[in-house]
Length: 364
Image 1 (tube, rainbow, N blue to C red):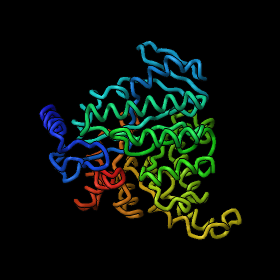
Image 2: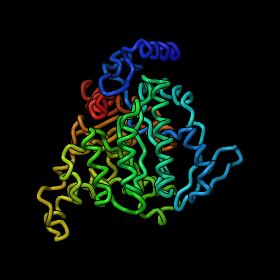
Image 3: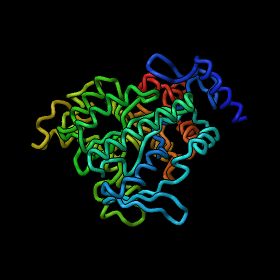
């Protein structure tokens, strides 16, 4: 049955009526894997492109990385503060499609993950980004109704990043920009990054964030606390930097998606409001931080239906998007089921979260 569904969807794409290519086309209205009026679009799904991994294995060692293979034959990359094993479930599109079919996810917006490309010298970071983004386009062309791409950028060299935005945005299926919550120790309000935000805003490309090496990681080596605590904290630092640092004011049409249900942002917003009214460090603020809550979108990776319900009430169902963190062990393994378990949602709100908001953000 799953194969029949996939064959039908791909047949529609071949006919030219349902493929998601370019700005003028739209996602298929039916059928969807769970029978909703919108496709379930996962905006937080990681993919290591095989060509990207091959380039790291071939040239990463000469560009600051330590590259090896483990006992299973998997490529291993170690860079300062981070290490990555490029596993099959992160690389194989066919394995991914089976998981998507089994869990009712119609579309993955594919993105890179730790350690991204910021560890590399700028020229090699650009080369890695180009190979990855070309691979995103190829994945979309191979499975046009199932995969979209969120481009990777060499943010350690913003001038290269701007050029890559302009190049990669023309590739089929590329619908957004994916960057870390901090770039080599620099917060996202750093003025060096503002030309990147300007291009994203001008080209209607949403900016999606993800932690890779969270602040305080040296104190969180035990119990996987660097992920349990570090990732949500780093997301909050990124959101605060964008708010207090003036980025959200300077780029009023820039769409920003926060991972892991916004991390610590929703629960600390009252503290930020109070602090901004009494502390001299924030006297430049003309609006309360809470007024920016709805400038962000928040994915569903909270691992708690009740907490997610609270976030929906706080920011609105129109600011929440489906996310899974697939295929990590910290992922929502059944993200559509999770959305269906959030209490007090109407069907229309559920469909916004499952795919309606993502269609608007990605302009599909």
